[in-house]
Length: 154
Image: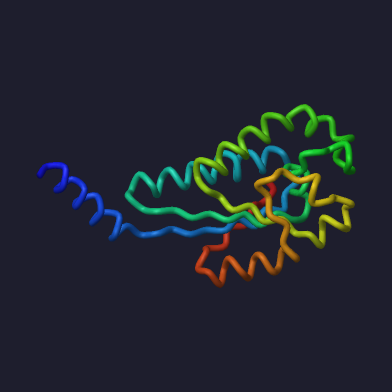
């Protein structure tokens, strides 16, 4: 009986939980900004709302100079010469995989800009989804009710 009551209370709690939805417009190539705003800031925000009983859904639209953080084969791109990126790639990848799995974050990347930079879809991490353009992604997520959050350089 107690178990049934506990399950009923939890079900009611989740039924009335609010869903916070936000989309990050990620175009920074600055490693510190990327780390602070995406790798640390987004999980911190999700944890804050989750602790209050809310559900959280997050999408990231990648374009501009942010491509480099989502390329698995740096040697196939212009980013292979970026020593700081190469030195930090393993840690960045590990953290991206961790937050993608833990929080179910959707990562969309602009194919239009990828092609201009010579990045192929097979050069990307497997959890990143190529989309027609950043504009298409921004419109799609905002029309689905996601709050727009720009990732600014410092």
